[in-house]
Length: 473
View 1: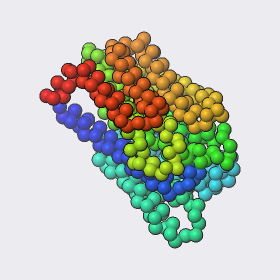
View 2 (view 1 turned 90 degrees about the vertical axis):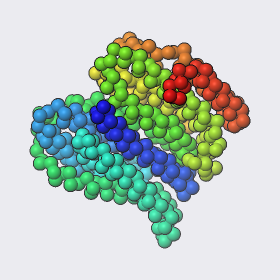
View 3 (view 1 turned 30 degrees about the vertical axis):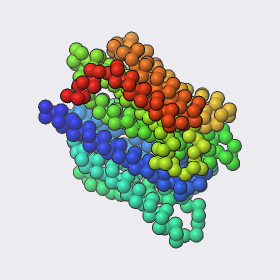
View 4 (view 1 turned 60 degrees about the vertical axis):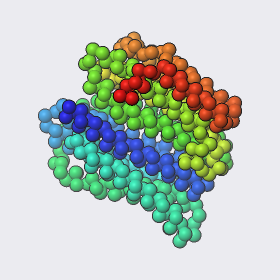
């Protein structure tokens, strides 16, 4: 019982440290769309994609390898020191090389040098705290971990407010918005690094080449999956900038990225579910009834996910004021139901992935992510020239739908789970069709949408009498 209590505590705290920053990021999106021109918001969104990819490349799976080997090796200090030395040296080499080449990088990516320079500093600082954060998690210091993570976002938020609302009134330049955002990120990352710096001095520096090679081999599939994730999650902005006319590309990315953020409602639900369910899956892996339990959990996830899809779609004209209240960005609202459904498919994929995690076939996750990456690239290149950002939204949906379908198909062969396909199909089908009718046929009519929402609730009440009785108790 004490183990479960400890697990619940850590899951709750780590969930808070993950979800709360995303909520604050949503609030910043609304702030940015009022303070930035569409083109500048597009520049920020496009550059942020490279930060995501850079974070993956500079950590190169070492965080996951650290968790694996620090609990496997008897000499834990050697693991800590080897991982920390590896990331520190590689980060320093990257810093030197990137600063020397910053002008060429800026010219190649077609961004201002000052943006690139700040992005380089942010990437290095973020890489230098990967192992210290992993150490905190491994030591069970979840509260300290969460406080530092949340503190980073709060500092970032306050600095944004200062730069945009105070400092901007005392300078002559009017095009410094993107610099303000990256400067806020840089200072927040620097403060986070300084807070964690004492951990560097607690570890005696040594380096085991043999251990390092093992850790690199273990972390390589994680690196590949991470690169694929970065491409699937954000490179549609890169492709839009590449394939659309130069004079309109950044503004198009701006409206697309702002409305894409409305899919965060589903992302928050998926993230919270994933944080809670993964430990549950592993803790029940040896139970003879585990497959039935996994099926039931996935079924309920889809039940609530389908409700969120329909609810957000029905009330999008109200909720848009929370995320993107600037009407100049609303032209891309078309993508919101598509992105919501895409994120739901990604959530279902995470739930279906239980089979390869409990059977130690984690390489499959990397293979599926790479498959998704190819779909992302191909569909974006095919559709963007035809239908602009709508093509990118459809590419995201296609990617996560295929990943979900492949995981289900292979999983049922390797580790059969008795999913109630009929019931799941009814929930998903009703939600998707209703969302399509409300949004695209009746132009976001809330009255008609509310009727569909009530019908969905009645459907669930009829189908889930046992669940409702259990909840009442």
